Amino acid sequence: MSGWLRLGSAPLRPSFVGRVIVLLGVSVSLSSCSLAEAPLLHPSGPIAEAQRNLLFEAFGLMMIVVVPVFVMAVWFGWRYRASATQSAYDPDWERAPFLDGLIWTLPALIIIVLAIMVWRSTHELDPYRSLAAAGGSTQVQVVSLEWKYLFLYPDQGIASANELVFPADKPVQLVMTSDSAMTSLLIPALGGQVYAMAGMATRLNLLADGPGDFQGRNALYNGDGFADQTFRVRAVSQEEFAKWVASAKQAPALDAASYADLSKPGVLSEPRFYSQAAPEFFQSILDKYASPLKMQQTPRYP
Image (cartoon, rainbow, N blue to C red; front, side, top):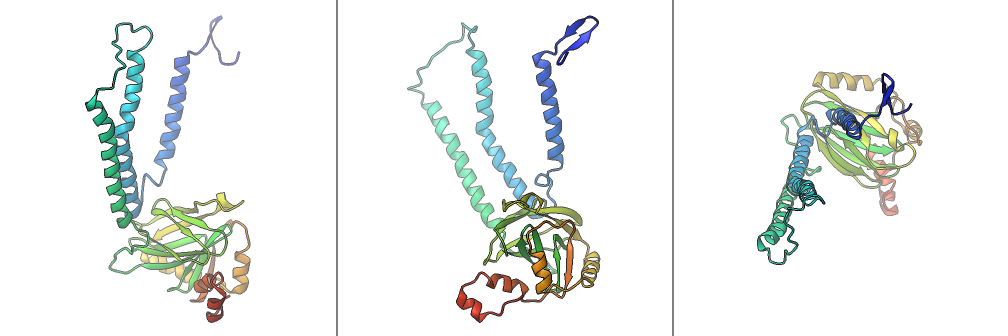
């Protein structure tokens, strides 16, 4: 008999309270597992950590209003239940200046504090703001395709598709554009998202606290392959980065033919690597969407 337990000859039906307790236990267990793995709550870089702290601060301020509402909802329901005939009921609130002041002053103060926090963090966490470092930063040019990302390393003369590698404890500066639909590049463990748009060059500065493997993805819907537009992110030591660059230099060159094949709509099952990426490659993709006058003045590649 479905939904029933049998003890001896008498069937026992689980109580409503028991079912609720079981459902709550399962929900808490599942949510705790997902939260434990959430990179937004366990950042691996100073930018992501500052963004997480800002989220917690804003959440805490809003709880000043939310928690009393839930507490009063339960308390009022109990105090003025049908069987509570002794509870005083006074619906006349026309002359309650203290209550009116509390209702208006507290939310106003919270909004003012939130406004100050947003103003401060908007400048401190500006994605275009370069991160100071003694050894400089790693420059990477990013081209969004359907449904993959191409990473160009102008200083090393190499390129990779769906794998971003950079030295740990050293800032990485991403300059992004798109050769297809607009996308939003997001690496949750390291920092927030910035859009990549055709004909525009946007920037994102990130830093990893130490070596580690992370996942990046496109956070803006752009068609059938959206769910699979993810890429591998690796923060490695300087020695490992040098080995990775040397290995990529053994791959085929990134020319017009290989780029045309890569830019076809589709999802990559494994990262691809290219050597001899021309320095003007990124600029040529920007120029494809520039005005006709500028396109005549600037050489196009490929």
